[in-house]
Image (tube, rainbow, N blue to C red; front, top):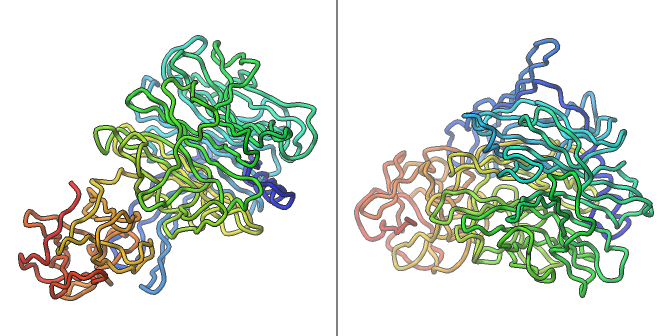
Length: 598
């Protein structure tokens, strides 16, 4: 939210961005979005005509249907192709509403709806229509593969905007709430008027079809009409002592000499009808008034703990070079330890980090402890104040199979965000702004929602896709005691697959996909130009479903490419660092023996 901006220029830029992103109107009933087919098999390094991605809208008053279809166009090895970026849940009609936009998506899986269906709800902020911001609610009964609009949540205060939504299913019956009740909330205000705000709370007892206003988790009034005392980004959690907690990012300390923004929570013992008069502060740094924690999200872990992810922005610092992601742990959901304990900075083994707007979730598959998934707006490297944006931004999230402890790895997302959002003048901030990954019932896949740029202004649409957990992940041992490595350790199409001394580089961290792919940076080990001849080079390339990206790890240690009938090979037995790899007739020699993650 507007917490990112520290100067009048940045403040104005983000205020305009948020007004455009979140000033929403009602979604038409009966709107249906359908998951498209996967891209057609194509040559390596190219994107051929993709199977249509359809979005069908059935208008209940006229029973008419319209279908929008997109087709990818071919690209050469010299130009990175535009990846199929997911399927459209909602895209504004810019002909009718030139300032239309959508963003800040949220979703929840309903485990207590007493239905055999795989029910999920999704919402987002939809705006630029000239009407107050509102939150359209969509329902899926097949695990996020298709969606229908079922309702719209508007502010309880007439004429006000409602933005930055959250959705939460009550996991067990507590005082005032039944298991399966769905809660929603957002910041209500007249966008641009900072004098008065409310965090409005709503309840649905019919799977999102209707909503009842319950209360304000907190509110402000009589404040100066200036930026710096907002209440943002509500999130719910039922604590281990059966209270309902409403977490917010709170700017109200910004006008004191000790702090800029804090993360804290209010509690309710009557199902959200009334709230504690004071806020418990969970993350705060009074000794450093430039630190600015916010954008908190939560997941429950199988060991009973709760894990919070949040961004640590920093005032007086360019927001494109700050806002690293941290995680912090609680045993009960309400006691997060010392407020000044930041927790743990999220990093890969080679110091890649997520930047901005994290969303954390836990999926049961992937190992004995399941897999923690964590998204962010960008992937970066470097110190605060001097970040380099990395090429895999917008195509990966982070994964961890140790309950959030230790190093994280990268995994491909089913929705591509390109460009990713930024905060410089003239750069759209809405793309990839807070992208949730919601576990599906099978325990190994997830729904992914992301805002992607419409190509004009700071305007986005919302896309969705179904992602799968990465397979066994780790280094691929290579001949000569070396490792399979991506040249330059960057996620750039065409980077050579090579030998290199084993280390901790993400370019040496490979996952074995159930689809027959071998992936690093979320991209695929690929035979150049779909070649099948001996000596054809092997490279990293955007995954496209082609035979050039299929590999069979055989019992003799070879990596066999069925399309070519050849094996991954070290040319002439040269095991020096930087040796580019090739395909060659399978021969059982040591130059074709690889040790893959199990």
